[in-house]
Image (cartoon, rainbow, N blue to C red; front, side, top):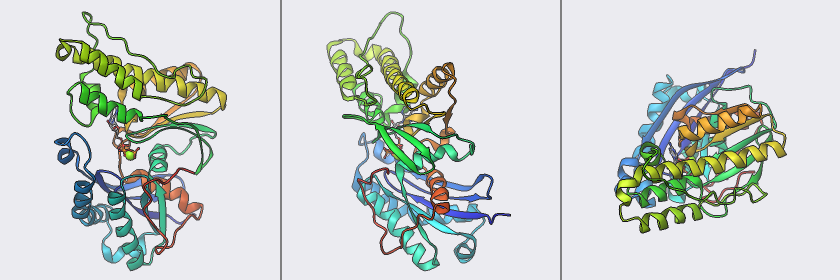
Length: 344
Ligand SMILES: Nc1ncnc2c1ncn2[C@@H]1O[C@H](COP(=O)(O)OP(=O)(O)OP(=O)(O)O)[C@@H](O)[C@H]1O
Ligand SMILES: [Mg+2]
């Protein structure tokens, strides 16, 4: 029988301080704890994340969050050394001052507890959220990773083997949602705000473009879509009364673009599975639309349960389990935060 392994993972790349412990019994992954201290309410008043405030909040929260994760998993500082096999941490991409808090905490714990360290790419974490409750994903698979900072179509031929086949030329879809929400006065974060407001208005029809839909490649551009929305709203004297219609059309435009490009790429690369990952994968319209269209082509779509779509540490632990089995460790004195870390 295989030995069970347990990993503590830490995530602090943006504005969530998170820690999680997951166990791998050789057959499936078990989330023993998943603690998140969100700073959304603090950054909301500024309409976006303020890096210095984020870093200070991480410093305040990191030890209590790690402590709670250990406690909820039935571990404490004294038995963690015996029960854990490794410590994983997000080393990038993200805000350098935010990343450093998690990285330095993980390095210190690794040094004190003499446990190996695993450096996890935040985007790999978003992708591996899909393995948290589904171990039978077939390769090759195509992962549409849509978040606040990334908009990548990733082809995976095996575990930990990533090939980027599509990227955005400007904004990521999450960023576009956030900017569109600002234009419409809907608040932050924009994705959930737009989704909540979106509603068809039979009296007021809006039409927005679908940039790069037929560009012949798998790249994206969301900046033009946001600008098209801005121009229409500026011209509309009664825009405040049409917020629901603008939100509806904006959400549908993003959904159309992402679904069309993903299906085109899945066809070209003959993938067996499609996955959606990242914060925007919380979007219910996108989840339902992509799933229905892909099923029409006989392709299964896998999307992580809602709590694991936005930033969390369980997804980092999930990627770390596969890196553990692949022997991907980094000595504590070599581990560094890298805000521009690439997925490879
Ligand atoms: N229901 C939703 N519909 C659409 N977008 C959403 C929804 N929920 C969250 N988002 C968007 O997801 C983004 C946050 O996702 P995430 O936390 O993964 O991003 P990030 O960590 O800031 O960026 P990255 O993962 O690229 O480093 C925000 O842009 C937010 O508006
Ligand atoms: Mg993220």
